[in-house]
Length: 394
Image (cartoon, rainbow, N blue to C red; front, top):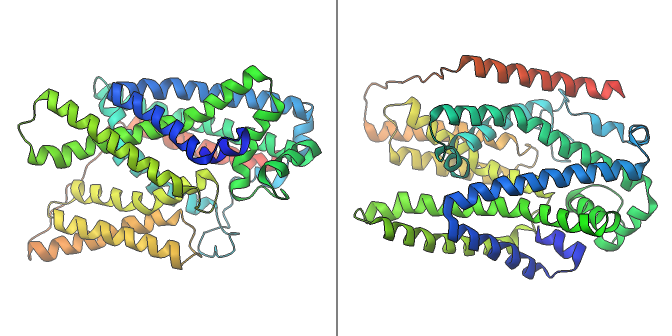
């Protein structure tokens, strides 16, 4: 986010980091989980409205939907490719195929929505279990149209960039080089540059706020979750007699601490290769598979222990880091599945070695909401069919 603000409105990188970080830290410190949730709701509404405004103005600049459909790069409409498996990706031509996205994505999002503290804390703030189930179902149904809107806006602005010489010249000026493709971090600047140079002043302010909101609600959730986990798993373990007042005081101190840590790493994250969305998911893919595996060991086995789980998760993470550094042929979405399987095998084996030769008992857990599961599976199949037919329609 700071790189975008630096490129578009000439704010120094370090100043941008501090502005976004300090403001987020203040309201997270003051309001805790309530501030995080209501802040997320308001910021998400602003962000989505901003995307809709950009989409409308972008289509208008192209001369209407018909011109957009005529000039759009048809190859970018191919969302389902069954021929790419992601195991021969050294030249980055074998990525984002159907199988690595579905299989690797299953492990990624099962971990994200099932085990990640930033998501769990929102669900645990709900009134009761039926509400939690409704929230998860709504997320499963509404995530696709929201994401699809983002993608369509990207197609619109990308088409405008390739057909409007003025837009291309502005991008060259901002990026300080010849903008000849939509690769890497160049693509991240497309939306903010469009906002600054194509939209009215009042709208510009709203949309810059929307972009900053996207960074803030991610940061606030992260700071709050890190603080909560530290309190529950470390502080309360050694300070069992904490009063409610002391609990809040320690939580706020930890919020400040983790906020400073996040800001520190923000100064280095911009150097990772790839677009923002790719960097986020690439880093997540190192950890999410092994984290999911630990939960699987805890739920499905009776003999897995803390020692084995720790050995397993360390092995899974190290395996993924090795793949990142030395095996570029494997597309990073596979790391989620590979890391999970490595963690389960090594964690389970280490637990058995430490536990001795005892019979292993498995406990199977079934989800009772069969109607909801059937609905989501049918919805997924419908999405795949639409994505597969879309290029053929144009």
